Image 1 (spheres, rainbow, N blue to C red):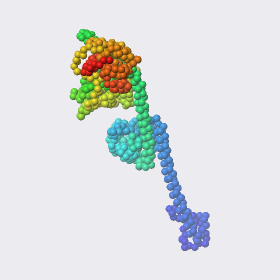
Image 2 (cartoon, one colour; image 1 turned 30 degrees about the vertical axis):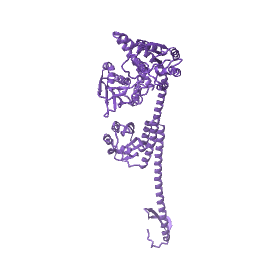
Image 3 (tube, rainbow, N blue to C red; image 1 turned 45 degrees about the horizontal axis):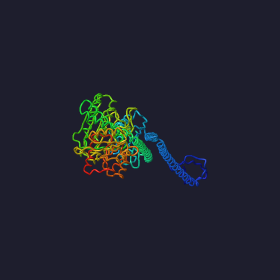
Image 4 (tube, one colour; image 1 turned 90 degrees about the vertical axis):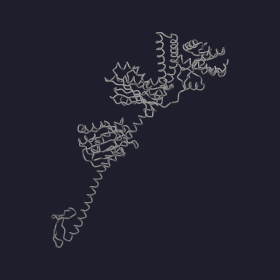
Length: 629
């Protein structure tokens, strides 16, 4: 380029190029300039170049911002897509499966997996079978090691997520994993990991984890969106929890309504059954007394045992409907178990089932109904027997009783080596009428009956089982002395001759009247009968009776009606009452009996029980001057 000291009058043509902020002469151009105007041209050209540089910088900035907006828009789209998909999913697993797939596709992560919370108290996290795997064969060993793992999480990536309840990133994932997962992760070439918590409030209820073989620097925007996705998925978990709880409450309500509807039916059935059972029991007792000895005494005893068994079954059904209180006394659990096992000895031996008994000999006493406890043991052994018949030998049944160190609680365990019980069934097996047995084989009342009995004694029953590894039922009962229930008939002193007494039996059941009349006449008493309270009033007006045995439920005038009538006409006779009851001790009946405080016999009763209560009342009357009607 010519120096600026040259003077030229001839116009020259130059071409300029701007590069790195400098102006360089290249060649002659079509632009004619003079030496004097050259300075102005160069200055103007410098201004144009700077503007172009600024414009270029602005263009680059716009492109960067546009890219960031696009990325942010894509993240928002990911969040919206996962939220909509999760809310439309049928359950939590479908929601998690959808989220894993969409997140992995967006972030180009080849591995995605979900954890769900197991035992919250133990801090346990259970690996699910929910995965997104782009190359299943490549990551198969890592998947297998992960699903086999069931342990407490306190360190590593998942531990940090649980502790902080926020997403965590790691670019050295092999050293963040527990030993069982680290080796297959390294073999698969995994290097970067991201874990995101699923939150219900502040509680971490699940974790999504993602892995990549690339070293990927932390992405703050992605981590923020993952936190929001975790909150959305947590709402799905919370919603399913609420639905499950609502379903359980509805099922409980339905069962309560079912039992309430059955209550009145059971009460009526029990009354109708207890009357003939009373006749059978008393008649069998009298038959044994008459025979005294001989081959038929044994048959009479078997009749009594069968009738008492029927009576216990009725009581268990009533207890299931919460209409019959347990009759407690001081009992030892181990002998009850041993006796129940004896009933199954032959059947277990035939089915090649080895039974192991570990019964503690020095257990503290229980305040319990021995018949109900035996019913629990019988039901548990029956269920175990049926389960063991489904598997091939060896078959094993183990029954254990023990007390805790403080001797305040007794535990009974019944464990079998059968097929086990699935988690889904474990949540339902104690429901009334629920059964997995075919029609005609089971009623679905056995375990619900057990739970009712155990809870009625202040205890609890639970099941622990893994499919393919048998089942263990655990019963716990309080061993501390419980308030004794007042017996209906207090223990009598040694029998004292009462002499011949006039006794009126009021009952609409002909068999009851006949059996009691025969029993009392055999003991030397004079007996008259009436079929209802109205006829009894006529007989009481005609003559005096030393004792009145009166049924509660009768046509025309029932027991309470007769009692109230005598309160007005002859209150001195009220102390001579003994009530006979075959109903379920409904609230109305129970309130009446507690209010009047009259001795009573609960049907079905034995001949010995009838004699005891009669002697009790007669002994009390002898201490006072016998009144007249």
